[in-house]
Image (tube, rainbow, N blue to C red; front, side, top):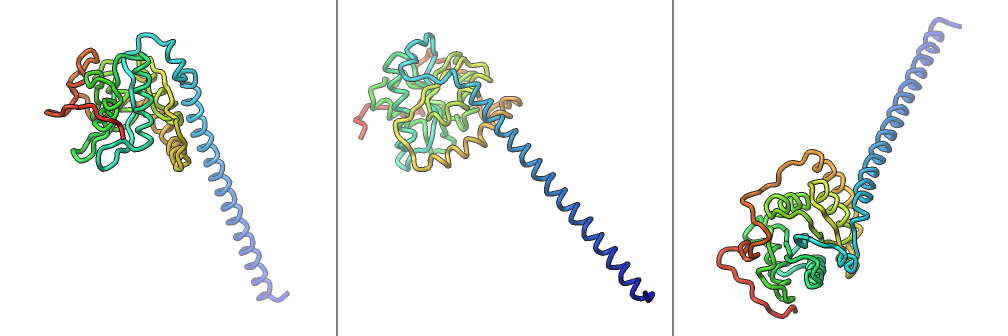
Length: 255
């Protein structure tokens, strides 16, 4: 073999070995990333399962709530309201269930908790008006204007409204996380679903809930304070102390 041919053969051999090494490194990197992704997915799944299992026995039927005694309030969790302030269907179902439980004597007052962080957007007043229209006295309906998240609602229910034993109302997919958070914050909490109908965007809600459980699992470890606390508003007062200044809730027929 000529010297020139030998050099070419040697160079080709080195190049081939280098390509093989790079391919092996790429394969190892891909396998490592896949393993990390699987481990991460398993961890997220485990958190979701832990949240659901922890709250499972605390999820009651409307009839099952009758056996409870000493609940301080029924917490109705906020959701979207329309431009005129009226509750969206998902929120109207929550308020409807809360009113039914109140009328059954499950607790002496309702606590409507939602987002009223802007003058132009007010979930809780729409919720209260709907309940008043349904026959609940205004004085028996408290509003938490700073319930910006499920976590903040439960924190404020404990520290601002001084609740100890609560019944939480929302759709079932959301209920496990709500009860989990409440119990991790020291509340004796039970949940009742408000599932009167199915919603077309339920797959989106369920996907978002998967991530929210992981977030709130971490929040319940860290336990940061909510955006706002403020002075205590005991639930033995009139719920009208939580009304905006000059606002009076008058009963009207629900459309």
